[in-house]
Length: 79
Ligand SMILES: [Zn+2]
Image (cartoon, rainbow, N blue to C red):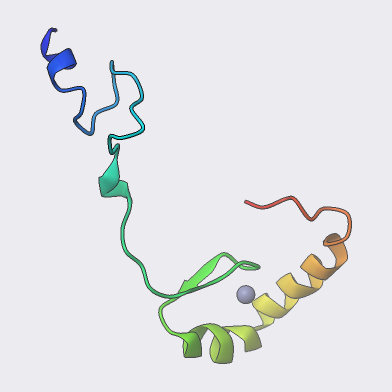
């Protein structure tokens, strides 16, 4: 398969060495604009939905309580 060498700069990283100047898998990067609750891992498009609606939900409240208890001993644990 000689064409592997010829397509070293393509988006397929198989068989080629890493090149810091090449782009790999750029199709996995998509533009987003919104808000994420890091407690609940939930995504919202608008600040209103995130803060004014989500922050009043019981689930978010419970996650906040759980987080508050764990924060001192397990700060580095991020998914
Ligand atoms: Zn939340």
